[in-house]
Image (tube, rainbow, N blue to C red; front, side, top):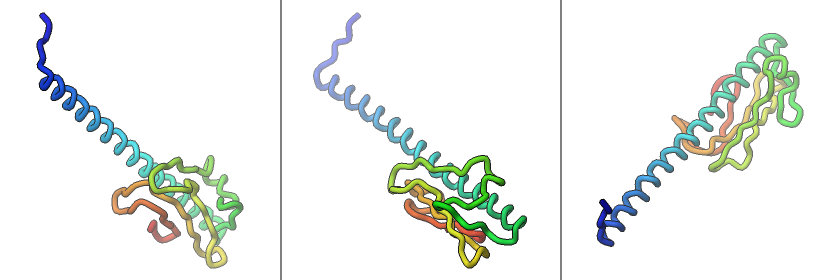
Length: 130
């Protein structure tokens, strides 16, 4: 038995399908971007923990080469690189030693607003993630 739709009914049906597809696509993209930002914060937490262990063992935070802490591979299997989109132009976690090794800055970027953090550049150190 064939369906007999009028043109108006067919247009409404197509618009409903487009709206449903758009909603699902938006939800998927939003979830994916939140997952990337969550991974960035997890990476920063892991790097901070490795730096804390390095400090406890050596009494100072390490120097850096090309934005990566020297000797960090002792505490990490690999130094992570974030893959982000959104407001981030640079996806690297860039480390610099501060105050002759008594602290450090770890710069990173979030692609979108996530939890209490705004999209954009942030800095972590031995005390906090800002």
